[in-house]
Length: 338
Image (cartoon, rainbow, N blue to C red; front, side):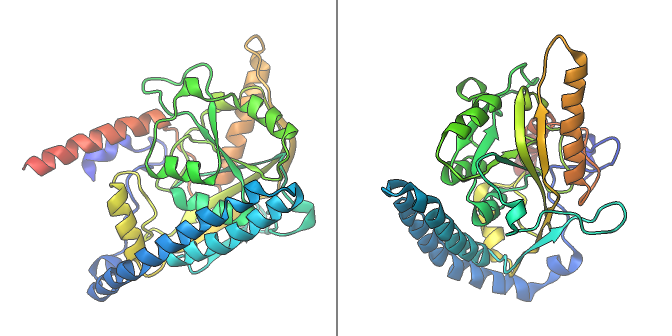
């Protein structure tokens, strides 16, 4: 769409906010459209039952008197119900693939290997497309989430906080695009220290961009959220959805998004993995430009690694997305008046 070209990245020409264009076959297949409507009717009640059961049974690990059993039991429920819900949504299989390095050899994290095991000191950094990412991550690892505050409109403040959520609160926040106020969050460095003191085996997921995109690239990360943070181990993943997937929710309403998601026969998703990065810090000192530069280089290096399996990283930011959404809604109002 030519009217949205001003929101394309100047270097790559990619618009990170518009849904990817579906192929002609996907658009013109009437039979699949009819099948999709039938699937929607069948899937909705079953999906609701699974969600309710997951929520009810998820309370059990939290009230157990034996903490050693809490995490294994939570993992069991997350694996069973998370995987079942993914299948109901059309993800018959989620491909887990090691990223290929510059010389063409697989070079990534191995799911289930003892030496690559995650714990409470592990931080997961990924790109972010929709709440499907959270269901996949919860199915695989039962993590906690640190969602970066997103209430700024004109510029990123000097200090950026994060909001610490479990799966349910995190997925609600992402689905309904709730505003996470900067003055009500905590600094990431503080959260990391607090987690070390807690009895938890769950890794921590951080979506670096602070918002969702269409999965074609990554926005500039909110670097200030990582100030003074030390990471004992970092795991990097890239979520890559097929172009025909209904998993992009940047412009349409939540209702239309859910209908489209449940009306498609199947979706393709590949999770690319990379070798863990150990003992890195993102310390900053306002009086030391070298440390600031090192921190920015670290975050940018991580972003480029994640983007290596999709497209080059974008120079656009969450502020650009907010402007895009405002512009898109104005254009939609004009269209509806005509």
